[in-house]
Length: 145
Image 1 (spheres, rainbow, N blue to C red):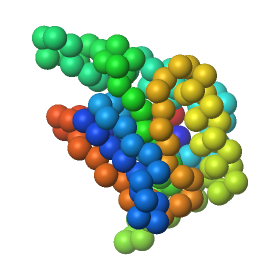
Image 2 (tube, rainbow, N blue to C red; image 1 turned 90 degrees about the horizontal axis):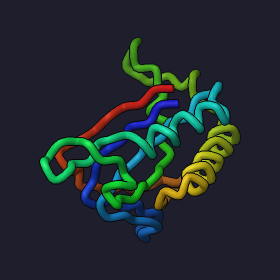
Image 3 (cartoon, rainbow, N blue to C red; image 1 turned 60 degrees about the vertical axis):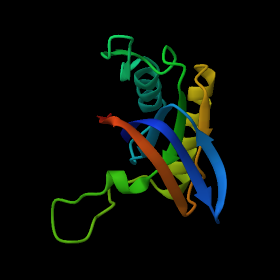
């Protein structure tokens, strides 16, 4: 699993020119699911999202997690994150999950984030989405599990 996490002042997802979800201050999580991902991987990601200190405290230091910062999470599936780009001029997706497994892991991740009590909005798995964001900082981190 690869997750690209961006601290945002706002972010939204459109499908067919209609906004399907949006958040204010928080984190945009672009999620790439691999063949071998399962519940253990989901648990590691959710723990990291809940506890990762990427929001500024009153002194301007990154000491607050998303809950302490009263932020939201926007989770968007993005299979291209797992692409192999080392050879040639075309990405390979042999590490990527099948569509069925990818959607299952994505839905399980949604449930786990909600169970952790984190405010969550989502994209639409498999859809052609237009994702808009204002990266705050900019602050971006990549998690690989």
